[in-house]
Image (cartoon, rainbow, N blue to C red; front, side, top):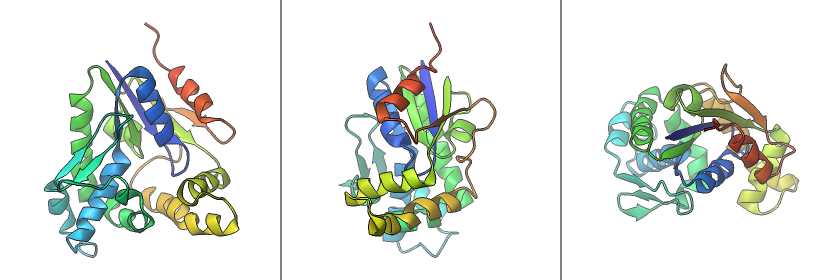
Length: 220
């Protein structure tokens, strides 16, 4: 039984690292951010982006299916594959309008905790923004992966636009920095609390960061 909890801001590399760790250890993988993105898309499709009071019931009834296989992550919403759609700039621009609504977080936190509980055998890697403190505070490994703002912006620009010139950095700055500011009002993911290991990936390759996480696993 292994539970690995990984937090971090946008562009820190937490998703890539979490997937790699889960694959390496043959564990389930849960991207909680994908659940918030799917919720934002569902709320938008139901015309409720300006109706926070209506959001919790909508999200509770959301017909969401999410794959826990690290090499085959798929998100289905009402039977439609939205894996790519939820990563679009359009969804990135609206996700904080849903993710910062506290009753919505309560709904999704309960769902995420249930998924962790159901996958403790053989184990699961969970990543997001309040994983080490709320979703899995009793995880075997609790990590906050961070990186400098400049590095995070560059990574996201390369990932989204394939380049990191001034225009690309400007185009992705809102998605990275503004989202982090918004979400930091309701989740802890910028500083490592007591018992959580801080890994700065600014100068590290993905493999080096993966190795740093694996090194934290309890020895048998």
